[in-house]
Length: 376
Image (tube, rainbow, N blue to C red):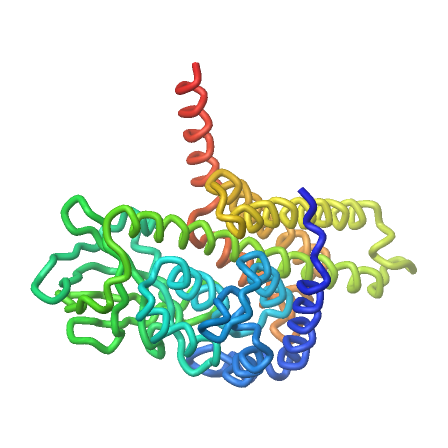
């Protein structure tokens, strides 16, 4: 497939690069990291004013409707600059799912506010020991005028400040997808500091009442919605990792070119140059499989296998490039006054989010075996 960006998408990517560069100087990142909630509201608003929050939202709701592939390019730039904004949970997991599966009224109420930056809508896709939102442990009971939800979700981004949280629950044999108010009765939010240093939240629901107007989908439509959300979120995380890994690789190349030992640049040592070459191969392979997955999702074609392959590469690339970058930097790699640590921690966080490489390799193997036996 030809993944060459169109002129329009190239312009979008360049605009995103300029905005992120303007807002992610080291001093600005340090200041944001001192906040309890790592969120640069000024950067988010700048993205809104440039129209970039609406890349995958219809024009009727204020977006520019360039599709998921364009949005994945934005996620790559988020990773490349370690930008403290919730692009994946808000624009992909929540807004992307709502754009495709919500009712017209729900889209009218929420999507325009996301595009303008007026409010956040996030998603809760993970539970303890379960990263498949299409098969949740949370339970729902249908009641007059809506439903009642009980269960626990984890690693919810911006849960305390979100207008609504998108999540799924099981009601008997049927899946249901709803929007919950994080301040509703029966909800408890507990802070969770994760590997990247971000503060996410454990979301405990105890008989939370959800009105009919906040039910997004039920049955087969709900299953399709959560499958899309999982695949799109995994792919967006892969795109972020492309940016993160590419940045770590380039930082390492620059550092080893300038650092001298025994009278010559460290980069000229064979062991160092071989590790740098391996990093380049990993990054480019991850880029290709991520573009493949993003392209299939963008076209509405089956993408499950492509997404699994991309997320496996994502975990392996994040791990290998991070490790090589740390080793080639020596002690400077763990110095908090040097920016590499941010990328290494974020890479590790993504590596473990929505399925690690070992787990997904097992799933992919089982899928291939099942297809083989079915055709035998």
